[in-house]
Length: 576
Image 1: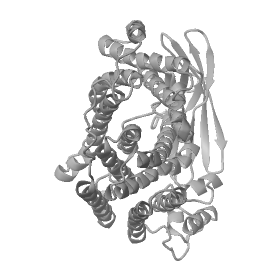
Image 2: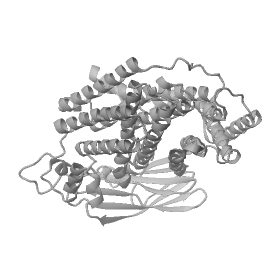
Image 3: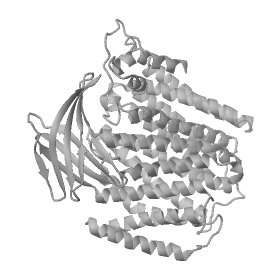
Image 4: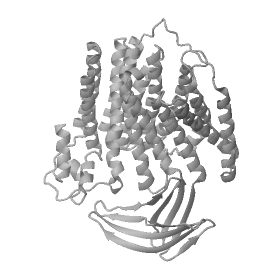
């Protein structure tokens, strides 16, 4: 805590005798971004990671008074091994307190793209998610060693899983919102490797959460729970290091700093080896409980959900890691883009959504499908509705109709649960409804988005069949750490509504970088998104105007999912 606060103070006071401050700050930077600059770099973010690890171990220590002493002790030991590993890594390769003499007058500044409120609070929240998974990892190893993986342990560790998952969800949301309005592409998810490394532990945590719910009810799926606890932390650690060590941007960062890369690999493999050793030698599945389930039961539906999640996780893992291995082995550079993920994920998304709609309706142990009538009725309504929607707007009729109808089906069924079930399992209802809204919003957003890209001079007009864009004027504005060029546009749509939008270009003084700032008009139904860039050696500006339907609902749905998780976190024991 003292060392982290010291680093924050060094940033606030612009103490350029500290190498980390010199590389990532500047006197003209606003105070908020000076503080955010503390973790906007490799060294500072590692110190923050260590601080969160230490705070979490303290909370765990204080919150587990009624747990067996040996279990508490072992969990703390495993957690300390992780902390010591990170501490050695920090001191050996990434010291945030290196001294520069003579002291420079001015710093290098922080990348302007990172000078953004969403991105300033994004890493700490994401780290809370990542580090929560380290407690799950340590606890699972301790419970496996002592043969304590049971219903009691499941309800104790469930809180940590939910907390970790909620923080990770919110961290990913903040990253997506930032990418949407800051990068100027008008998208919220690009299947970029840096995004994928936060999605992978999220998928593993989601699967683990469902497994823990089963383990709480009956003594089964213990192997699943332990393996997923190990995998979640491994993926979290891989993710942080892949992003922070620069391997994803360029594999040659390993060559530039082999010490850092080598330490990461040795530490990671040691942890994986220890955890697998404990799992194979100490895990005893109880002989009196068979893992065979009746084919129609809630347990079976959760197992099916697990297999789907593992498949999605494998696709993302291969798409992220394969280019790195290929470049190391053959020096060939390839990038795996959205088409790869869409082709492999979309066909499996359809049965996954259907299973998710029916699964929660089933009972534990043995079930039969009740209320068959409304299940069939909603399915028919979903198909008809989606056919009518897709027929009007899309060319690829068959796959889009099936996709939208499966998303609509889940949406209708989760919506009905609010009215029929009222307050029984409200947290699950909200989270599942949020997920159905998310998938539906993303599908409709992809189907109905429209885009115009054109080059315009001041005073010129672009006209298409539905939209008229008038480039009215340009203003200039001087801010503390950048100069701003603001373009004023008037946009007239087919229904004769006129919007005034003003995107800008910012020229930062330190480092000297030009960024494009989009102007976005948000309504409940759609976003109007416009961004400009300078065309080199010409008086023209490149203008990109997009209409993005249901954008707001994508953000709302993720907040709903997190809220569902939070509700179950605070649910009292007797309500379970």
